[in-house]
Amino acid sequence: MTNINSMMLQPQFVIIFLLWTILWKGLALWKSANNKHLIWFILLLIINTAGIFEILYIFFLNRWDIDNGRLLKFLEKKFKETKSK
Image (cartoon, rainbow, N blue to C red; front, side, top):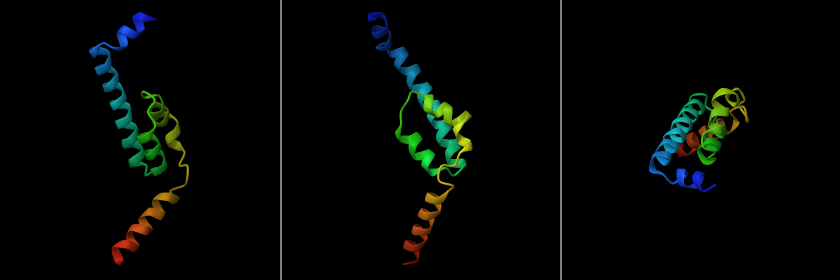
């Protein structure tokens, strides 16, 4: 167990882990933004799972629009109302 702990504290491991996480999170956020999946975008931004949730979204979950774009349409409508005032 101490070998795993000491390995995880090494700067090389931390850098590789951060790059791995940033890569997958960036790709998943990009894909959700392009698909206009606001709920997925928020979930991907908040939940940190070392790339697991992001990989699942990229390959499987992106086919499902949870709210059928209702939240995005609601926000667009609200912003248009505030701009016109």
